[in-house]
Structure formats: C-alpha cells, structure tokens
Amino acid sequence: MDWQLSEQFRLRSNFAYQRSENKTVDHVVHDAPEMQFFLNPHWNFASQWSLDGQYFWIGDRHRQDGDPRDDIDDYDLVNLTLRRKNIDEHLDVAFAVRNLFDEDIREPSPYDSSAPSGASIPNDYPLMSRALWVEVRVRF
Image (cartoon, rainbow, N blue to C red):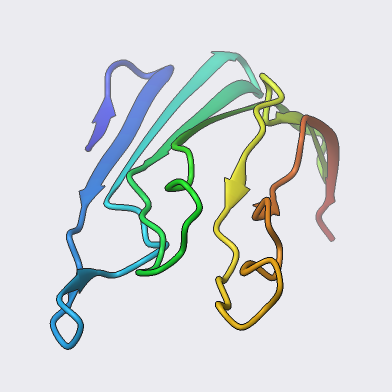
C-alpha cells in the first residue's frame, strides 16, 4: 500500500505471508518468517523538515527439524528519522534512532546435531540494540 493522505503525509505499508515446505522431508522450511509486516509513515511537517517512522513485525519462524530449541521469538522493531534538507544548497542532515524501544531482537542460528551444544550459537544472532545515527549528505 502506498497512500498519499495529504501533501504533507504519506503512508506506506506491506504484509507478506509465506508457508514454504520442503516436500522431501515433509516439513516447513526452517528459519524463514511466515509473516512480515511493515509500516512507514512519512510526515513533511515544515519546509525542508520531515519525520519518518518505520515499524517492522517479523513472525512465525520455525526451527529446523530435530532442533530442540523453542521456535525463535517474533519481534517488533521501530526506527525514527528526523531529516532537514537543503541546509544550504549542498547539505542535508538526518538524526535517527534505530530500535527505538531497545528490543532484544534475534535471528536464528544454525543447528548442528553433531556439535556438543547442538547449536553453533545457542542464543541465536543478536541484532543491533538501540542506536543513534547521524547522517550528513553533501552534494557537489
């Protein structure tokens, strides 16, 4: 969906659903999310100023067959970006907060039944915690 609600406000969103199965072993393909949702409100609130939000929801990821660990948790991720364009003719600046609510977000790690613990990384791959970013764009 891409909806221009007004001259100053735009809303983008998408939803994806997949149910992938490995027919050889008759099992759901592991680690891939069955559902994903994205929401992106964008607000031009003043001349050359904008506020951009991103919301991601990732859900229903299953472990590979034989992996005794619980299925990996769903997660929500929120990012915000404040941007000022054309500070002069050649300069834009943005300030962003990634993972605004400092969620403990993880992506699945592989399972190896021959390894002593079974998982090469038992608590999966941690993604970035809350972070502040500054972006400076210079145009020549």
